[in-house]
Amino acid sequence: MVASAEKKGLFVNLRQEQPVSQATNPAKTQTVDLDQLTPLQLLKIGYSQRA
Image 1 (tube, one colour):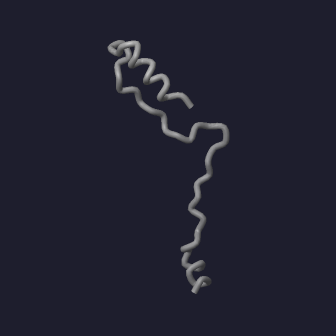
Image 2 (cartoon, helix red, strand yellow; image 1 turned 90 degrees about the horizontal axis):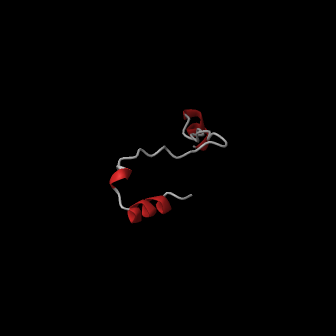
Image 3 (cartoon, helix red, strand yellow; image 1 turned 30 degrees about the vertical axis):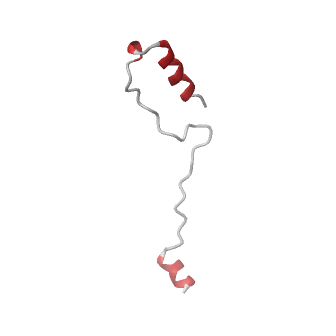
């Protein structure tokens, strides 16, 4: 059974290669106008984006 499943391609390695030393998360688009925020809101945004 396993041999026939392998012949059909059920156990094909589907893992994608990840680039080394590059960001793997998609870039976030900024939807908030930073000029309209209070200093406290700016601090909250800055601390939430820390790595």
